[in-house]
Image 1 (tube, rainbow over the protein chains, first blue to last red):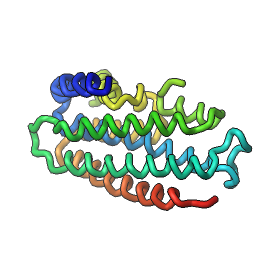
Image 2 (tube, chains in turn blue, green):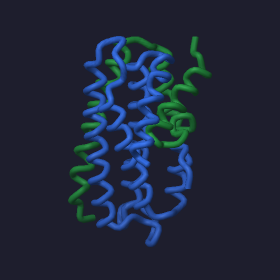
Image 3 (tube, one colour):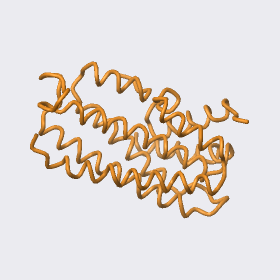
Image 4 (cartoon, rainbow over the protein chains, first blue to last red):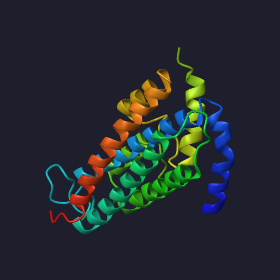
Length: 135
Length: 73
């Protein structure tokens, strides 16, 4: 399934590029993904059990799960840094590198996993709505 | 002049690729403003500046996440 999605992405990129150049489209995509990741990090940090303002159990995020989520976030942000670094050095008129597409997909997968790990609550619902996802 | 339709199409394609849903289109006001600003001021240098800011913020957030990996409370 993931291979198929990656193939679709690679095939779709030339269409993306025609809308403003591969580097520009890639930049917009990375900034967008970063906004989503940042919203997730900020929200999840406020949901950790025992922290000020956090909801009560079972709606809060247990510390053990928070550690796992933080590890995923660390990986996702590192991928963003890598992808942005590649995009930054991309000469004008160059097609979008497959590495960036792959990294973006991996960030997307981590987002899905992090959302799965977060307990269903009003905070999570608001987060999902704000990033335009579906339950 | 901002071509909203073109931006929306672009963002839909990008977010679909990233499997993030229609994230950007419905994102918070800050995120949308940030993305629209880049779209409005299209150019190699503008994109470079945006990527520099992104790299700096992503690295800052990565370090926070690294600390939180071992948080005990």
